[in-house]
Image (tube, one colour):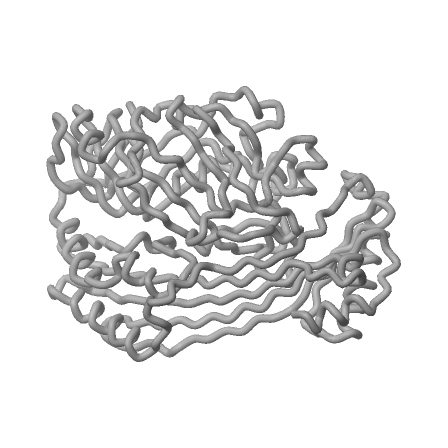
Length: 484
């Protein structure tokens, strides 16, 4: 990284602003399916993105040739695009003052935690796989754990010439998972650890494997899958809805995170990922939810899945409340979108790789805990359903009307849990759903989750996002089940 900084400093961009972002990612996945070890997968990806602001235009170019010639070619290409865009852009980039960051950030590493040992991890995965096959009705099962290590370096050309250090960040991600599918009497049910597309994904070391509950998950998940085969369908009607964290992360992600992305609000995503029901005029006054709703954007939390010290445009990470006491305060917009909209935002200009430009993305988007225990919330419900772990979702292109399904539910009658139900679903409208929030769980009900599958942008970018949430209780929600 330092050698690349020296090489970059030698070049002569002859532009108003030029920055270099270098990214190197190494990944490894271990998996066992139906008691058979799957092939080990390993990936290495390395390259650089050059960003240029010149004469009011904006351009970028990526290269995997990390040589003097390769970087110069990327600078020339980025400058060419800046020249082409300067009279056609919706924004005059000469008004933008880009940050000049300096410092380091590294994911937490627990000194006494077990390290990445393939043999021991494969033995664990095989043991959980074998523990899951407890019945002939178990037709598919498996367990996995993946490791991802990313190093990033960012510096402006002016800072490199002056001998500044720039920003160097190193991230360590651990992603455990398990899933079991049972089939009987013409019905199939799947139960998983944290969700089939999301999970207890965090930054840190091997301590995450235990903290996520992978140890012992095989049999537990299998028992719950079999239980769902015999369970009745979820009841249908207007009732209270208690969502646990494995579902709350999806609810938060889709109906708060995406609608608040400022580039989407400004219209950048309309032809692909959709627009938003939120408008710029709503910030500071719009009632997004009940007084109990407080939503924080916080990349500074050490072990969450999308924590960092600086975003990919060099803005320093800080915690901000996006929604405070139910009132919409600020959007998810990085430096460029903030300048375009004239609104305060957050440090969330993020790219999924070296060959993608930063755009407005979620990072760690969390619901602040309340004061209720899980037992207190259950006891307050006369008629309702508890739901956990997302299995399906559908939401319109303005991120307003939605319909979500969960792996598992439990009826609540007269303040007590009254049995498991399968195929639990609910629907609502973002603009009113959060106003029905009537209890927020305390820290004891909260879990830290993450997903590596948040897609957006053209060309597409699939990025890592973190979500922490307590259990939340909503009043008078439309709930429905599967067919009898």
